Amino acid sequence: MATTAKKENDIASLSFEQALKELEVIVRKLEAGQGELESSIADYTRGTALKEHCQKQLENARMKVEKIMQDAGGKVTTASFEAE
Image (cartoon, helix red, strand yellow):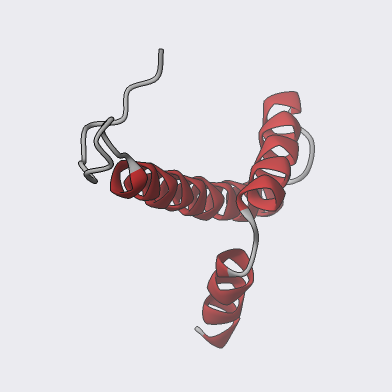
């Protein structure tokens, strides 16, 4: 259990870019079928945690964008963020 908590703390300290790079490495490794079964399971588990971390980071960024939107009169408004 202590090891799992340490790994989760490790992931929480990663920036979005760092987590995404590590996730890409894991995906390529799993797609290539490299490694033994236990290693692949551990990689898959870490990849899932990295994906969740990235999703949380993106959601936080989206919420920040919504908070800082202003209309022409300077009034702060919120609106759903939609990619063009």
